[in-house]
Length: 126
Image 1 (cartoon, helix red, strand yellow):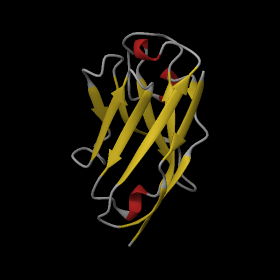
Image 2: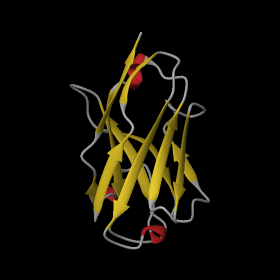
Image 3: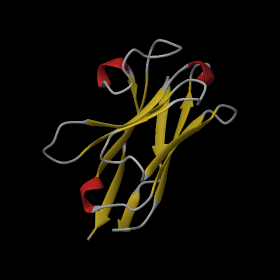
């Protein structure tokens, strides 16, 4: 399984970015997908996740109402639309996928995810 993120960059506070993650190597539409981020000196943290069907989404409290996760099961991609960005959103953002198909027991836990992309840098200036 390969995951390749894109769409990161430098943006001013209040701006928007849309991250994309292209997945390959297996049937995409049977697996949940997640986004995590890691800022310098901090642990990796959950950002958002989406069920295999796209019918359920999950968000960290810090991004709820500002970020939207979505997926396109035809294009084998998952997206993270980030609006009203804040300097504290600055981090490397990673796309992640589990080994098991179907629903996850805990969409928020990074231990549920086995495959990770290389990450894309998001920098929000004040």
